[in-house]
Length: 298
Image (cartoon, rainbow, N blue to C red; front, side, top):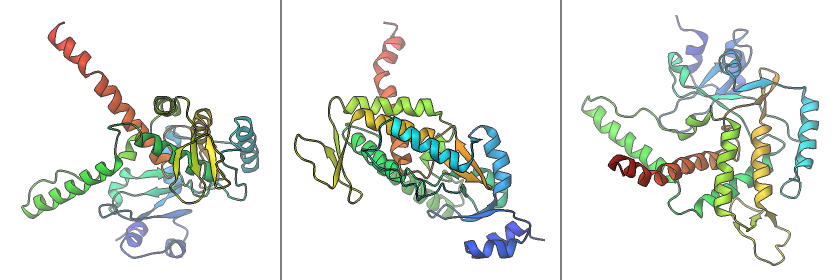
């Protein structure tokens, strides 16, 4: 006999239908969205996930909602981020949801937490910090290119299809680089961001267009106009530190704060993940000559 989870996974359901079909068996359920061809949608019991993931050290229970917002607003003013982007206190912290990597319930250990940044009060700050990081990475020659990784993933899926037609063993099951950073400490992530920002931004200042998703460049001594804001190196690093330290979200009605890992789902998360990849590449390539010397006994 199929369980309620399996029954729901076998039919097309909406967020409103979940509670009607599950009844009292699922205290709080959320819908996971299928993002690409090799990812499946499904639902999960948020209480089970909270016990498995939050107790493992990624999240901690924090103060009440009002106190968290007030503390967030105070820290925002202290670090001087108001000129970069204003806090939108009309927005609320989002609810944790799960991205399930497979429709088979027995394979739910592949799920990962997604911290929704599109509903957070610092959504605008995350957006501008992420755009600045992406621009700085584009200024580094030979930087880590996410578009290339997507091409590799597509090619591997084609290779899998060819192997599957010949009844061969599949070489690749899925591809998502952000799965690697759910356990990265905030201190390590901040160190990586400092390396990237210091390497590119010596004395310069970024100019961020406030209209549209694009439009980040170097500031020149002129009047920037009303549709652009200036971001210094200190403000950018302060923004990264603020985003990492204020990843609030609701888990089963309890306000939690992410204490470890890059918040997948945040506006600045892709830029931070790319910085980590580039930092690893730079460390590896800069030690090649030293490794050769050690190997030759010189």
